[in-house]
Image (tube, rainbow, N blue to C red; front, side):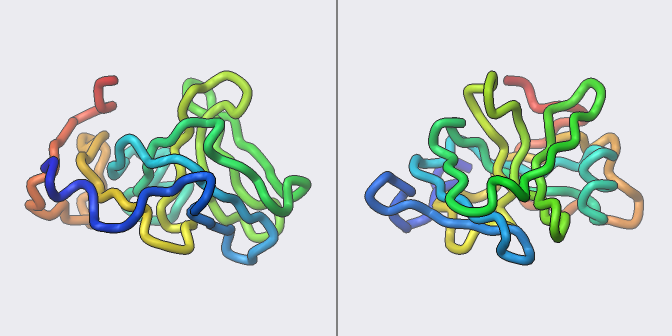
Length: 150
């Protein structure tokens, strides 16, 4: 999957950040470093949070995520046994997950980005929780019944 995981766009940097926003645009952010990995999560928590069968995320260094507008609109849900989930308080749009003060990496929701993230999903995790109504394609991605190791 190595060749298919990264596409031919320039990686986000301080000079050329990748921007993103919630659904209503109240919260905007900039990514200033390349994503390290990307994948689909089929856990029940992601299903209920998104209203779909999975969420697609990419991991990036916490210090490479800058809130450029609407910091006051950020809300967080801290599920027991899980990472904090950050979203817009005005529209509910999902933005990223992780502890902004303690974690080295955050999981950015790819759907909130304005452009091509420069990475493609590489794995599917929590397949044991995938709903029966959401057929998982035979896409060649690495698969995990639970959490992806690492």
